[in-house]
Image 1: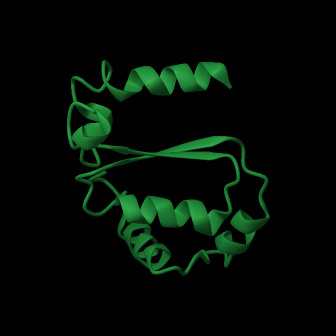
Image 2: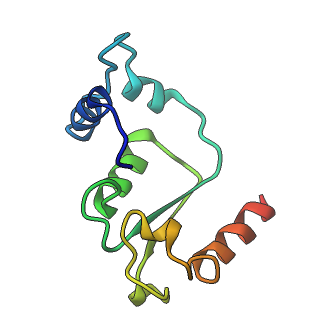
Amino acid sequence: MDNESRASLLQTIDWVKGEWVDHDDDFDYASAARQTQWPTSWFIAGKNDRVLGHPSDVRDMIAECGFKQVKYTLLSKAQGNLFDYDHAGMLTNKQAEQDHFVAIKQWYLAL
């Protein structure tokens, strides 16, 4: 999360603004995403993720890409989780393995 290049950060800023065309090769990611037959997917956001995976951005991405078979989960105490997770915490919190990782593993194995 902290070792991204300047070029990567600049492209991320553009992509967040909705400009999904690559700076280097002009590939139109938005068009390609809309035409893709996405597999069954599960998007997970942390309630306290303020920037990199903000819950509203995650929901917007699901809509913009045209996912059909999709599940969305907001990791929060209100939803029964142990914490109101932030961006890194949903992966690195010591209790994540006993919290949402269990459901993720079950979902994946059931595919």
